[in-house]
Length: 476
Image (cartoon, rainbow, N blue to C red):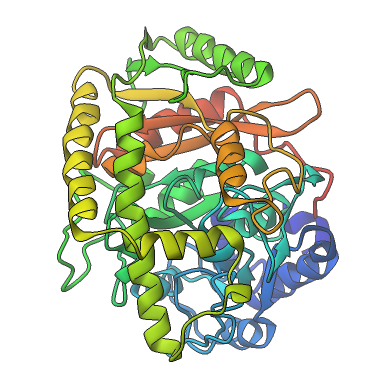
C-alpha cells in the first residue's frame, strides 16, 4: 500500500483489505505513524505517541472485529488505557499513568483497532476549542490558523487530515459535534448510556457526557457503535434498546420525515451570514428529498435552563476535582490550573446542596418540555456553530478572562448543550463550507434513544451531498 492509498479508505475499507490479505495490520500501523510524523508539527493533534505498543499489538492475533487492524487514537481525557499517561490537558494531572482499561477501551480493542496514540484536548475538556497551556493549541487541517474545535479537537484534526479514519471522542456540551463541524467530519453524540462509562465513571455522574467517535463516513460511526453500544454489566443505567444493528439501518431509506428547523440561538442574537446561508440551503435540500419541513424553535426558557445546568455542572466539577485531589494527595496550585478551570473549581466549591438539587429539579422539568416537542416531529435541525471555525487565540482559555472566554464560546457554539441535558442523540454532518474553505456542520437531533433515524437520514444525505472526497490542505 502506498502512502497516498491509505487515506483513500475509511475504517471499514481498511479492515476489508486486512481481511483479504491485501495489507497487514503492521503496514497500516506504519502508515498511520508516518502520517503523525508528517503532520503533527503542523496540527499538534497527537500528544502521546504509543508507537511501541502499537507495533507490538499489530503483530498479535487481533480480535476479529469490524475494524481489525485499523489504526485508532484515544482522546487524552477520561478514558483509561493501561500503561498510558492521561493528562486531561492539565498540569495538575499531567503525571497520571493508568493501570487499567476503561470498559469502553476494552470494547474498542475488541473491535480490532490498534491504538497508536492519544489526542489533544483542552484542560478537563471544558472549552469548545483545543488550546490548553499544557498541550498547546490544536490546529485545523483545513486552515491551521483556525481552531479544530473542542474538546475532541485532536481527534477531529487527526481524522480530518487522514492520519486515522476514525478516532475516539467524547461530548459533554458539544465536544464531539463542535470539532466534527470544524474539521468536516461525521460526529454523533450518542444517547446517554448507549456506550459504557465504567468502571470508574465519577466524571459521568450527571449524565451529560458520552463517548463515541468522529469519522469520515457514516458507516464507520454506525459500525463502531454496533461494536461498543451494548449493555454494561453492573451498570446502574441500562441503554435504551435498539431494533436492529445500525449497519442495517444505514441501508434503509429514512422515508418521509417530519423535520423541525430553527437557527434561533438561545440569546436570540443572529449568527454569521455564511452559516445562516448554509442552514437555509440544507433546509431546501431536505425539502427536495421529500421531507416535511416545519419552521419552529424549541419553546424553552434558556436562561433558566443554563442557570440550572450551571449549578449542577459547577458542583459536579468541584466534586470531580476533589476526587483528583484525593488521588494525587494535595490541592492544586493556582498556576497548575488555567484561569477558567480555576474559576470553575473555586466557584463550584461554593455551590450548596440546595442549589445543586434545585438545578437538577429545574433541568428535569425543562428537559421534559424539550422532549415533549419531539412527539410532534422526528428530527430537529440546527447549525452546529454560530460562526465558521474561529482563528486560534480568539477563544483562548489561557490568555483571556473566564467571563470573556464564555462570552466568545456562546457566540461560536450556541446550539449544542441542551441535548446533553436531555440525553438525546445529536449528529453533526459536514454539509457546508465557508467561502474561505472552512467546514461547518449541520446538527440533526433525534428522539431519545433513536440513533436509528439519524443514521438512516445521515446515509441519505451522505449519498445526496457526498463529502468523502473533499480534502483539506493538510492531508495525507
